[in-house]
Every structure is written in C-alpha cells, then in structure tokens.
Image 1: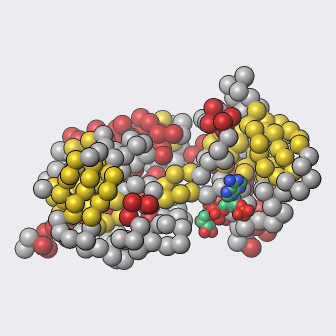
Image 2: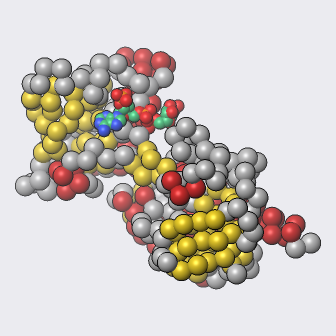
Length: 309
Ligand code: NAP
C-alpha cells in the first residue's frame, strides 16, 4: 500500500515528490509518457528563478528529479492506465499492475494542441515553438519576422509578448474575428508591430532542408489562394488540452477539462489532490506549477496526518 502516489513528473509532480519525500512518505512517482513534462520540450528556460543565465529545460527537470530522489522519492517509468476513486484505498492500474494508494496527487499537466502538420513536427525546437514566454527571447527570433497561429487569448498574449523581440509579428487566424476577450483583442490589433492575417491556415512550415524555420505556406480559407510568408519562428497558440481524460466523471472539471480544486489543492474526492497545468488554465508557468506541487504535497501530508490521529 502506497501512502502517496504522484502522477506526472513535470514541475508540479517533482516538487510534490520532493516535499512528500522530505515528509518521509516515500512517494511513488509515475512519469507518464513524457518524463519531465512539457519543459523538456523547450530549450532554454530563462524565467525559472535561481538560474540567471537560464537553464536547459531538460536539465532542470533532471535536477528536480535527482533532488526528490535524494530524499527518498521513487520515480518509476510508468503510465497510469485506469483508476478507481470510488473507495479507499484508491485502486490504480499502472502498466497492467495494480497499485493501492491512500492519497493520489494528480500532476498530469496539459499538452499543447498541435496543428498536426508533418513539417511542424520536424521543425519543433528549430523555430517551431508552443511557448513564447519560454522561447521568445532566444537570439534566433530577435529582430526577425515571426508568425503566431491562433485567435484566442493565448495567441494575443504571445503576439504581444513577442513584439519585444521580433521585427514584425504576423497573427495568422483561421477566421476574420479573434476569439480573444475584447480588451486583449483590441490591445493586440492596435499594436503597430502586429499584423493580422485573417481567414488563413498554415498548411506547411518551411525550412526543413535548412533545419530551421524560414517561413510558412498559407492558404486563404475563403478564396483558396496560397501564399508564403518569411519568418524565423512559428509560435503555435491554438489552445491546450489538459491531460485529465482518465478522471472524467470522477473529479469536478470545467468545460475545458481542467480539474477544479475544491479547497487549496483538494478535489471533490477526499485524498485526491491536484497541482499544475491540469488544474490551471490561467498562469501555466513552471514556477506556478512547482508552487502548486508544493501546496498539494503539504495538503496530502496533512490529510494523512489527520486520518492517522
Ligand atoms: P482558445 O480560447 O481555445 O483559443 C484557441 C484559438 O486557436 C482559437 O482562436 C481557435 O480558432 C484556434 N484554433 C483551435 N484549433 C485550431 C487549429 N487546429 N488550427 C488553427 N487554429 C485553431 O485557447 P487559448 O487562447 O489557449 O485560451 C484558453 C483559455 O485560457 C481561454 O478561456 C482564455 O480566455 C484563457 N486565457 C486567458 C488569458 C488571459 O486572460 N490573460 C491568457 C491566455 C488564455 P477559433 O477562434 O476559430 O475557434
């Protein structure tokens, strides 16, 4: 019987692992399919406090794992396949094996929605990115034309952020009206560096031969006309998908699938706690996820202590 099972090894999961390990709870930490989480897919992380020169995303996650393991966390390469939260202890199926847990800490994160293009996949981290805050300041994007894809608040936020670095920001949206909130949309469209490209879809990211993004091929969805646009970067901001499908019907979620904590990090099921991007559609930063992971660990520790009193 496990006292604490943590699902996910992004910033939230590994911080929760560190804290529960230091509380002598010997957490079992499941990596899921993407050990280290979304940060491992980015290059330099420049906004995690404590690293003035920046740190490679992969290295940061390796360090977090080592730190948690030093205090007794057991990180296991494994994926949670099924879960029964209807009775205590919780019953989990991990790669076909049954695991029983007194508390469950969900830190499964969210995945960036992709355009689904082969060229997009091939040029990921070579100019295609899903996070302007993480990557926008990299030298390759400075004083270069950049493309942001999407029409929601995220796309507007990314485009506005990128105006600090790029020479021009092309906001490519599939309709002729932004989905973003009025204030964000107005602010974005008023910026002289941001040029909207309406009714258009990116059909190909260019630059595979050069091994770096050189532009995009566009299709006007109203006229069918094709064109190309030179750009050094493509920032895809077409939404996130929280990795919470497994818990549907068991835990309270909003209409987008983000788990809604009831109090602190506690969910509607006593003994189940949540942290990081699977429960946060607003901030979605490494450091906020780490903070929630810490809070969830403390909540789980107090839950166990109160039960054993
Ligand atoms: P979103 O609101 O779901 O917007 C996604 C955008 O991407 C939409 O414009 C959508 O087009 C477009 N899109 C979706 N799939 C696409 C595809 N396959 N190809 C091309 N375009 C595609 O997502 P979000 O902007 O990430 O925002 C998510 C939530 O977080 C929202 O509730 C938002 O308000 C909130 N948020 C708030 C802030 C803030 O307040 N500062 C910042 C970021 C996010 P259509 O418009 O045609 O559907």
